[in-house]
Amino acid sequence: MHSDTTRFPDATYKDTVLAPLFEGVKTHYASHMGVINKAHLVMLREVDILSAPEAANIARALQKIEAETNPDTLQYTGEYEDYFFFVEAELKRHLGDAGGALHTARSRNDMDHTLFKLALQNRMEGLISELHDLAAALLSKAQSEKATLITAWTHGQPAQPTTFGHYLAATLEVLLRDLARLELAADGIDYCPMGAAAITTSGFKIDRNRMAELLGFKDVLLNSYGCIASVDYVTGLYSAIKLTFLHLGRLIQDLQFWSAFEVGQLYVPNSLVQVSSIMPQKRNPVPIEHMRHLASMTCGRADAVVNTMHNTPFTDMNDSEGEVQQGGYATFDSARRCARLLTAFVPATSINADRVRANMNAACVTITELADTLVRDESLAFRQAHEVAAQTARSVIDMGQGLEAGYEAFTEAFRAQNERETMLSKHAFLEAVSPEGFVARRDRPGGPAPAALDVAFTRYTADLAALQSAQNTRLTRRTNASHVLDAAFNSLTEV
Image (cartoon, rainbow, N blue to C red; front, side):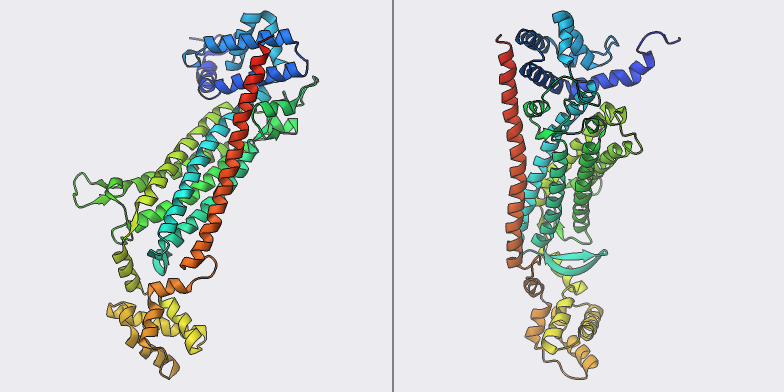
């Protein structure tokens, strides 16, 4: 069977491109197109491009089309190139040629990018809200666990004592910086392309600022060529999302490592554990794996969008439009699921204090403080002190004991290194090698000591509040704009 090459659309082109795009527009953009139509009509009337009777007729026709049309039931037939032309055809069916007046001084180019931005705004705000909740959960958990000792690991080995609160505060700091990047990305989709028309604006005296205001945007995107050619609002947004979940993936991987049987630092409650179908002794914290792959899928989906823009021309192009935009929305789904699960997971966990203590003793993780103490109290150079501490740790580990039983090994190491007896008493030695003492001494800004953490918590609380306030400002502006647009549009029909 041969295709008809004389009529648009070609059957294969219809099935592989146009019909899927039509379905995507129905799902993601139909409501936004209605909002743009209303705002554009209000603007055309306010600048006297359309008369009051003309605007009233178009407004009433748009209301009828909205009431009569259920986008979910529409099927792409090829009669109209896309959903935009379907709406325009409906206007002409109601009004004749006068229905085409709504398209004065605009193009599918500026409309498309405005549609995309409106759809991204909704998804972005939902994701940011989820991440605000996660940040609040991390902050609360860090505050409640600020004195809970854990072993910090470097290069896969036990390193030093710190607290669960200190660790979570570090992950929170990264998330707050990621949220700041997401705020910049949200700002990038807060500038309105309407009025750019195809490329160069219009010879009609349109009011671009009014369009931006009615649609709830922060401002106009100024350069009209950039309105239809710039894709940095897409690449910036998905890059910011990717970084956020790449970073959260590192936290998730630590949760996996800490909950391993051999480490046992993190206890995951039964509500978040699955049991093997054949091995009844196993407690599998499977949600961690789901978070890890959701974070990875989010990164991969974000990359797919960004990479599609590589080596594309700086002009209007389909590479940044319907297919790519619709494909990118899955990024928000996996991102929000991951964030929501992590928000529930972290507060539910607890630290296994016995295993932490055992790991600390076995690995001599407080030995750095012994070296520091020798520098302060014995006036040794740090390298000398480091050697005494190292020999003490080796002896204790060889004996299979913790540092609490290592005072004799320490005095021998000190004597061998310095040819004199130490002035450090056993009590002072035990204080130096205790995890509690180790943490308490580290009260510099950013350290794990309680006072230092409290200062940090105050800053994190303020930073999160500022981020939440910025989002609330945007949401309030858009809600108010929606009310203004509805009132302005409804007033057109009263003529």
